[in-house]
Length: 200
Image 1 (cartoon, rainbow, N blue to C red):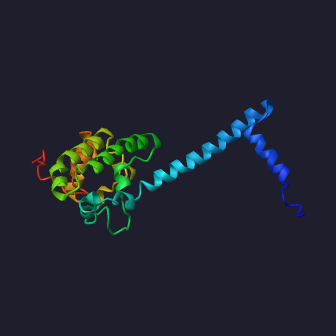
Image 2: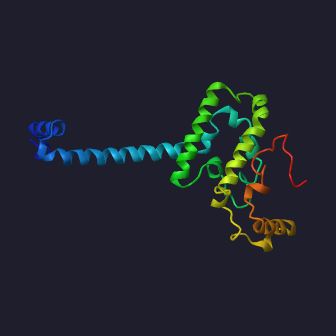
Image 3: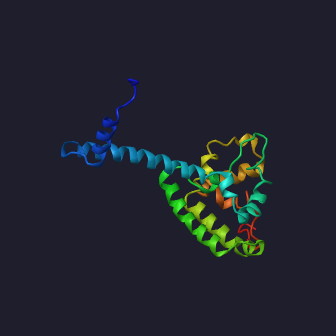
């Protein structure tokens, strides 16, 4: 018999220990099982979170693929001189775990609307575009454009490389306590036809 092989009787005793631990070892086995379960849960949880933050996942349904994804591909966030691409999750999902969890829970309503066919045609999508855009703008305003600031900040801007109008607008925005979304609506998706610019 190979000395590296575990005898069947040992395996039976080990299995029996985990099935019916003695009072002496029950707390230890419970801790070990809890620890291992926690690691497996945490790994599975993060794998699922990462999978639902990919461009492929976000554009998996035709409602997104045929509308906002096509618009996004024409923007600087998709193709630019530096080759840095911001995907859906970069703009719509917070990075920190707490805010990310809140966003993921809110996203479950999108599953309901997908099942109900709320925006399953281009006509339905366009009829809801203003409502969906306004909801997103309100969310970004409430978070001080948190997701925009993952990549952009007033401190990181080089005013010398900006056009004079952009310099002026950014200085004014800082003084007035404005946030990115106050001025940059329609940066990655078409503006709704009902949208009226308050500055015009």
